[in-house]
Image (cartoon, rainbow, N blue to C red):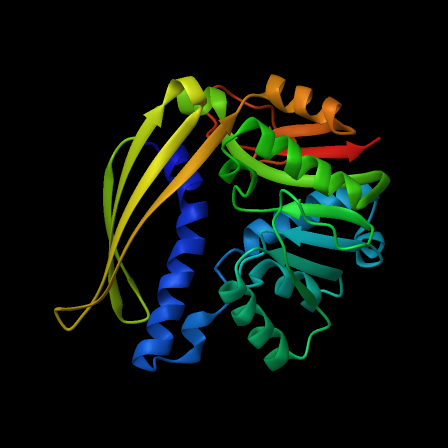
Length: 277
């Protein structure tokens, strides 16, 4: 497995592991710090940096309204709100939003979290920018799901508004196919043993990622989680077509976390910035 594959897969791993740790927190009365913000400050800063570039300067970003779709437990929104950015979050999981609201209440931050599906939400507000982090758009495995999500985002942007998202990159996945991997690491005194088995459907541009996660402490299994995540990888031509059909145009496509670089064939993650037209 290459480093680029590991970087890509770590995005969905982060959200899954946070849910696992939160479940353990409730069941075993672990420290509430386990249900902390995901360790994604660098990536969130990357998105703010891209917004800063698009809007001209950070002070301008701080005056903008940002919606984070697929926000999970609010880790990204919390980091932005602490920096003075006006942000709201949307997610389809009531459980994830429950944790998000608990964090907001504890930190007394002015963030609104809304339950909704990225493919069909309509919250009656306009934003200056919408973000979808950690491959949220790759979870839309059907073309119509991607188009529906883009239409939903477009409804909430004024002309000139921006949509920033990262996805698995088609050229990278095809040139460097995913492989089975096993990883063991410690998190808050608990050993996490993670096995990942990909099933690649080249015809549909989808990789079904089979996760098997064991949480072990004192040689006892505290929890086992088995999930399957379908991940769609996208090619630049597809994104250009989808954008033109939903009221957007591409203004930036670059390797994720590599601002200003050109996309290479072996890059597994790509970030797009679309502008509403």
